[in-house]
Length: 76
Image 1 (cartoon, helix red, strand yellow):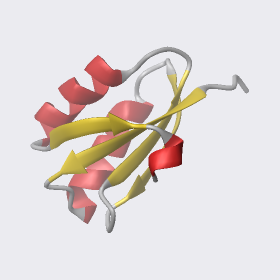
Image 2: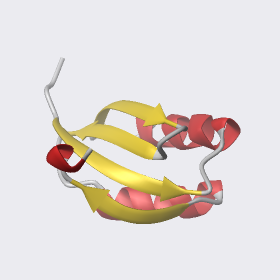
Image 3: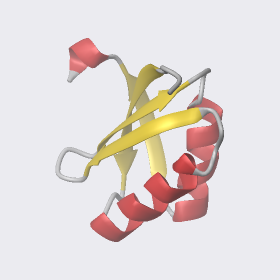
Image 4: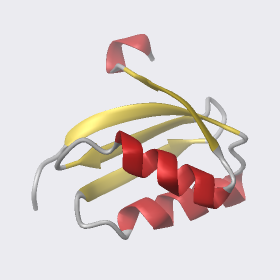
């Protein structure tokens, strides 16, 4: 299994249903290794093989969500 770099994002309007839609959409991409979603804190961790910010923004807009910002792990 390929190892990826972790990217963290804060997502607005995140509900459990939309979180599953976001996770499924991201996992369909070949560059995404894993996705973890914390609905309570609105933080999404995406392990990907290359930069993924624009793709996350696109998937968020399709799911009816808003990407607020990308954060570093130390800011969690």
